[in-house]
Image (cartoon, rainbow over all chains, first blue to last red; front, side, top):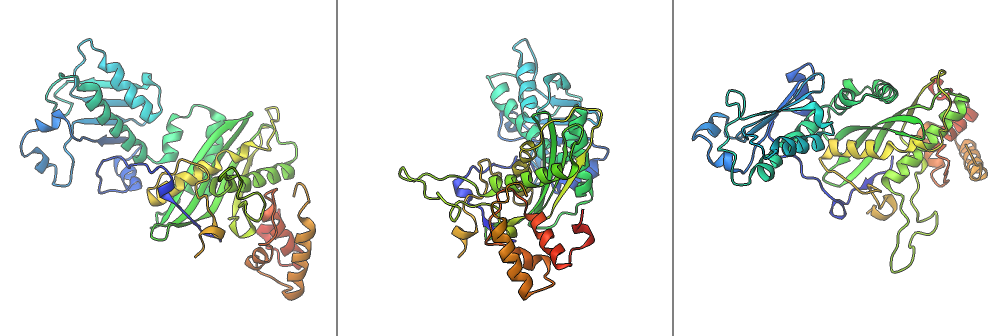
Length: 336
Length: 63
């Protein structure tokens, strides 16, 4: 299989949430059990300056002091614990907004426990116009850490209400063996799902990334697709398989380039398409909803391929690529 | 396959491969066709078709 070079300097790198855990994501989810996630995060803030001496040491030298915590229940309800106090300035709303935005959940599912010193971490006080800039930021970090810390499949299944979207997600994850996958260095898996044109799609991808050389390859792709009643199963499978390959090209290489008013890659010898050696094993799961009218299927199966690969790269290497194509200059230009 | 535009080249490449290696492995087929471009994204099926022509298609390759 061909290899491509990631050029992170050309792309936005995401900063991983600043939290510390000796456990991996999967160990963590396993340890807290039953899908309940608790995370604590804190950094540079007034509340930290006033932290009791010795408390940080008691937490262990490598641990950050705690000034906010966040709990995601098995039912998806989010509870936030903060020492800030609501006194009519409406930080209850602004802090809820911060968590809702980061977690992608409706504000109504978030409860704030504020200032109850039996339950919330120590805080020096609610003053000095610090609640939104400091506590808001800390809660964002806690929520971002929770997002990363949760298993992506569990997170989506906990929040998705659309039964058709849940069905393709579960079908793809099941065929892929998502929950049984064993972490290995340099490898990562990612998933994505979406709705378009009345179609439902979910894609899982496994990638291998060598951070030292910057090379990566896509190992396999599983996609589940549902477009109502299936009219022509073989034709549909053909369309979905072709769409996955097209999605692979768009994800990794394809871009019309512009340089000094010219297009330097105007032909198929320069414009990088997926080739035979690039195409990984592709497994397609088709869900047949005979009770629903048929929707078209030619294009929607493309949409989840790039995000699934991007998520897999992030899982493997901690590099968050947010521009397509993810690996713009393929084998021909990067081979030594 | 959807358009068939690239098929003649693939047939010639596959014929050449099978003349040299009557029972190719999947990797060999992929390498032999590497110079052919398919915009329909039918790579997996074309590889299976060549293996079927060679009589070496596996059970999993036949749908």
